[in-house]
Amino acid sequence: MASLFLLLLNLMLNNFAATNSLSSSSLSCHNHTFSSNRVFTSCTHLPSLEAHLHWNYTPSLAQVSIAYRAKQVPKGWIAWAINPTSSGMVGSQALVAFRTCNGTMRVYTTAIASYNPSMLPAQISLPVSNMSAEYVGNEMIIYAAVGPLLNGSIANHVWQSGASVSSSIPQIHSTSPSHLQSMGAINFLSQFHRLKNETRNRERERT
Image (cartoon, rainbow, N blue to C red):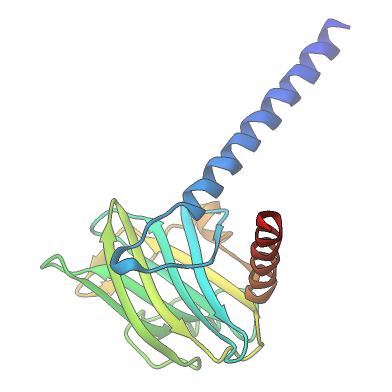
């Protein structure tokens, strides 16, 4: 009987800790303040690499404006990508950013054609505009507008990071589970509609 009680207590404590962790991550996502008065209506805490994705989606253009941010050391690099043909790393169309030797941020596009990509700047299959990057509070942030998206509002996306850059080329990332699992599917439009409904409900409550 005592062992059953301890088991139930342990499950309750683990559930409480997980709920608090998710709540904290959600607050970090929605309460984040960006430079230059940038505002994003949607965001999600990604499940690995201490990363978040913020976005504004325009359905009429099938275009998404994103801010991808992740914890990183000054000598490291980050990347966020959409894979229009598959669900993994190979085939993804990436945005890469790192800090140069003079302290400024560099951001560019590159296509990931294999498991040993060059990581050199290259044109990708998705239209990209308004690219920029910054390093603030131990986080690297990539800003860009991507689209029209080839598959509408639904996308397979991949995010990644590495600890070093050599001769302006990001070096290979770790093969730890958190790095190998940094991919997923996202529906920019469903989040857009959810936020519209929440706004509408708040307006109704005020009247």
